[in-house]
Length: 251
Ligand SMILES: NC(=O)c1ccc[n+]([C@@H]2O[C@H](COP(=O)([O-])OP(=O)(O)OC[C@H]3O[C@@H](n4cnc5c(N)ncnc54)[C@H](OP(=O)(O)O)[C@@H]3O)[C@@H](O)[C@H]2O)c1
Image (cartoon, rainbow, N blue to C red):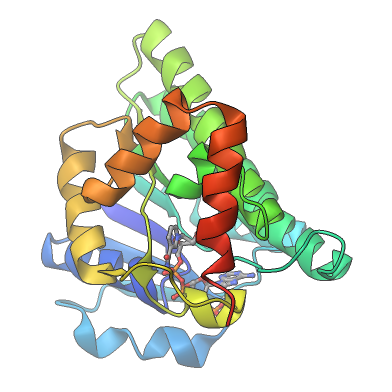
């Protein structure tokens, strides 16, 4: 039986991926900072071959501990835990931004490297990294968050190419959603400028596309449009558009 490790599995996209993967018969390893929040997911799962791990992945030692505890068991790694922060770069707290970078970038980087090395040796396994359409744009008023997601997108694309060149059967895919209705807004201190998708729909679409071997997964027309505009629009126009969109997110 295959095992999936999902970070940030106590709510939103991570929780719904856990529910859908349990329906597909996966054993689950679910990670979040709070055991009691992870436990709320248990009644929604189709079976109980589930390990819950309370770890703060913004701490490097917790990432290493997760790898030590789970190495050799993981067929699908979903690096989903992450958060956003709203505000002008000069006004946002440095500590919060460094914590964001530790979780959104460093933890994903560390876990991807450690688990991918094992997967490559065995020539099997898959990694799904949850980035965002934000990764296609510069994000005035959420500069650090957007940059963190651009890092993931570029990292994954490069790894994808390396895997192809070595004819590996290991897969890496990047999920880039637009707005999704989750706990994200509360923590980021924003309200969406356009209505969000349901996290269940996004999770279902992500798994469907992962199974098709998609390199980058863009759920919904709005994510696809942003990704195309991000590639073809001059920076000056992109920045003005992004600024206007971001201003509407202010609470
Ligand atoms: N919602 C959106 O509009 C949207 C759009 C594009 C991309 N995304 C990305 O989707 C991913 C999931 O976010 P979501 O929208 O589902 O938000 P969410 O509902 O806030 O879920 C975040 C999850 O991450 C966990 N988490 C937070 N900090 C953690 C830490 N330091 N260590 C371990 N786990 C931690 C949370 O659990 P605890 O708080 O219990 O630790 C929770 O389970 C994020 O990477 C986000 O950037 C979201």
